[in-house]
Length: 148
Image 1 (tube, rainbow, N blue to C red):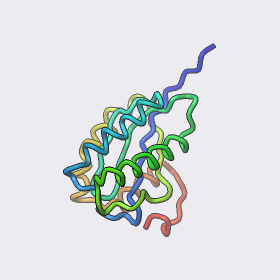
Image 2: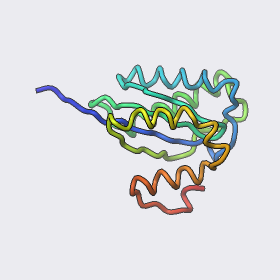
Image 3: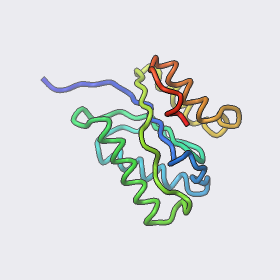
Image 4: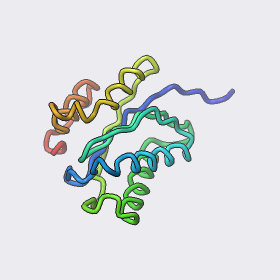
């Protein structure tokens, strides 16, 4: 028998100290770079987007790959690429940790739309409030001090 999975992950992670350093002029370059990382790991990236201080990805995970390894690879490789190519001059590092939320196939269109609309969404909602709401909706217990 082969291995079959149908798990879509909504990944969220921020810049160190949530510094607003991901300028809009080069964000698409970053997104393309991260898309390449997911493709190299045989993941299907449905959507990526973000704002100045964090990004969202909606992706599948190849069955042979651990989620933590994929996120680690994305953060380490993209951080190195940003620094070597001086893409975002004020970028230091990605913040430790990440949010990962699972969704089924029926949720994909809604989640794609949510990620597409990040710029509009964050005109009204802070990242702190967004992350807090995502954790609550997923039923994940958390300590407020780690959301800062």
